[in-house]
Image (cartoon, rainbow, N blue to C red; front, top):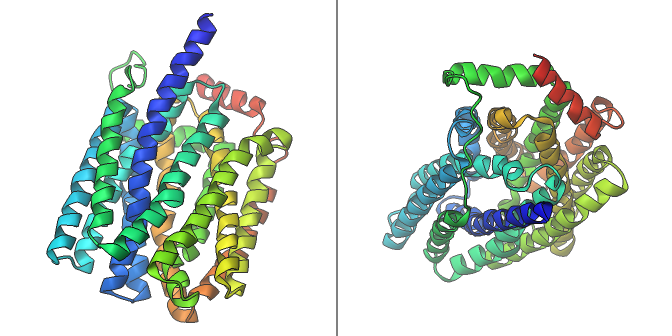
Length: 419
């Protein structure tokens, strides 16, 4: 009976976290379509379009490490509330500037930078909250549900809503975006309990010392270190193409602004399928097999997008990419939660996301340069797809069979205790 009651509390806490995630991701989805569309009305320069994507993710490169250390000290739920509140205010200010006709590409850049900085805290806190909310027995399922909320909000609903409302009234999607973040902050009030990491009994160390401890643990954890490298390569190579998606859809496939949202909608369907299938595929095969197969499918999807001029085929292939990359993210997220001790999770996540999310602005800028040099976003997709096949090959030789077994997690925790 005690076990049943504990499971019920865990389920309730997870529902509050998922509700907040759904609201914030809906806002994110609307914004991630509306901001590029706003940028396209101000410039058609592929370098400036890619630069917007880079600016949105640059904070991960700059602030993920200190944010991770901070989240190992403070209540992670309160950090999420504050970060979502900041995002609501910034996007609301952007809506006011759009309505007044005073927006410029540089103001769009500034808003993207501020929103991205708050996103570092909000998303990192949500990620490290998962083990505290559900425990260790349901990590695959919880990560799958969190990914599903992200997909439904950002692509399945947010993309079409963002593009359709932008086509009708340019200010409207930014207003909705702001409301989504405000709701996400308010919902977290219902997540009862304290979510400050357990004190070790020692006086708090300095930030530099705590970061060094996270780096030291990661250095001795060969499996997690290899996963960081693989995830970073996937992020870098994928973003070559993804930063050019709006130009690929509007200029190469000749889709309208409203149709671009429907194009992203198909990606959302694929992402939901990936989230639903990933736990089943892991049980039927292994986490290693899902990681390798998913990365190869990402390569096949982008290669196909580079070779087709059909909007239907392009959207379907983008759906395949979304399904595959979500499955890969679920595997990587569960491996991270399983292998990393809870008192180090924020710092290790900070290192992880500095590499993975920090690779996004680099990939975005390189994608803009590549499109400019090759003369077509389709050729950038083709290049990205071929490189993803190379990343799959690297993962194959880097990860031994059974690398994600529970025994590996036990070894990692023993290593942490023995030091």
